Image 1 (cartoon, one colour):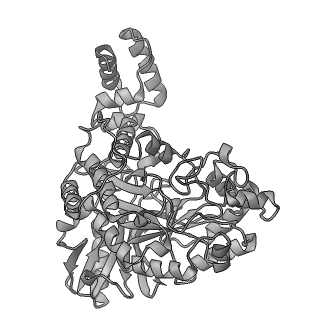
Image 2: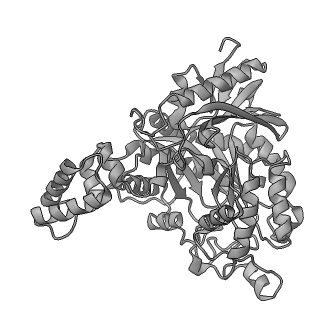
Image 3: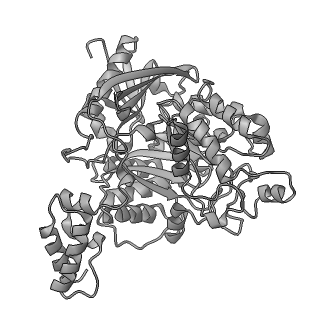
Length: 536
């Protein structure tokens, strides 16, 4: 930014007031362009760069506010292209040996895939670039949820897994001093000691990794894979379940069974991890009625009961075996209208403790030969539910910030899952059906980790609303840093103590460990553990 542009941006900041509208901002930009003889209007990102930590300016100019509305800044990065160990599923469009030359199951045109390719699949550069992008449009980045995408991550060599996560953490640790870095390194290896050093640095960094999500397959989520995931600092695993029917899984040559799903689900939960399922309606051998039954089973059969759900109606893409089946008349795809009908039927059935993160793939419509060919499927589904007089009560639809509420009450819903008991303890406004935050407390079935012997598990603690940076005080309608998290934590500790547990363990993000240290927890392997009693 040249001197004149900086002076213009400083002048705009000096003129902005808390009540200024976006129309006023445009007027000020035009006035500044004339006053300082600029060749163009200042960009929002340039004004934000000058504004620094002035929250009144930042919130006024912030673009895409939903990016941090759930309380964290999501940074999705992608591994280098690598084949899945079992081969290629019938609907799968991507992979290193296809025309897309992309990570498995991606076509390379999704936003995260494009960023990854731009930076040579270097985790450091992807993370740095995304942090800079979010910051430049007015979002705080002190609390990051890192999502590792790109196929069966747990099937990659352990040294690559450690290197990939280590480099992403190093990018956070060195931000914002690294925004000019251009050195690209697509692949490497790291030792446990190198990874641990990056994690220790991140515990007190200005940009902290408060959550780490890994994607994998149910048959690659065994004890040995989970142990490495815990070493990496993982807090959530998303399983490519796709269907709960064995004949459907066989028809798409998925390479795993429903029993694999149930076993992985139990092992991951009993290790303290959050669980997300990827589900694909409209697969071969399924039907509209079977898909509805699949969603019923997901939340009535204790082998499943996922915490998070990504629903991906099956898409037909040229070059896949599914495309060949369609051309041969052996497969009929689900169109947009039918997908809206299905999801508008399913979403009102969902329990209040699951979060539907997505309901369609990010694949550009022009690459889709058949299937859902509208990019606003969620909007269409909610419009249809409104027409029917129904609504979805999943977490995402009730988060504070997406609705209004001001009278939080402590509530609890308990249910069985994978041989254990789950307690969804939440702060809600029941009159407005608004969710402020929650904690997932689990009484495990059969944990394989020695650290968890006779421990209750906290698998997740989350307070919603606009993200408040670490060390910042809340204002207005921001609900973070108001003590709700501590209240939920105490409620979970008290409940576990009353039910006979003498200790409680939390699988926290690397960057959230300090929070638990300050509340009486101690490090024990990948966990934060606290002794509890009736006096707690």
